[in-house]
Amino acid sequence: MSENYSIKDRIKDIINGTTDSERARKASMQGQIDRADGIFQLLLLVFGLGFWIVMILKYFL
Image (cartoon, rainbow, N blue to C red; front, side, top):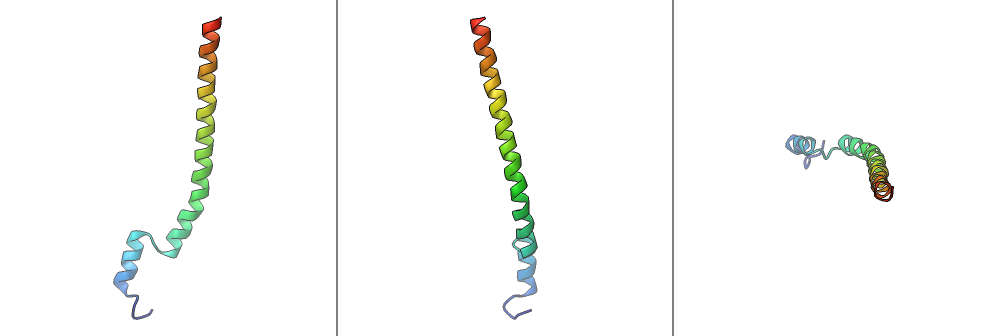
């Protein structure tokens, strides 16, 4: 370990989540978060369109 990078700095990095392993874990989870967000938006769109279609059909029938 170098003189510039002390134990206190290492502890601060671990607490702040700036270690390499933390960054890698967050980056790997980001793909799953993006996929879940896309699925949620698709379901929201489908239910929203379904709601308006039912309302329009109710109005005309």
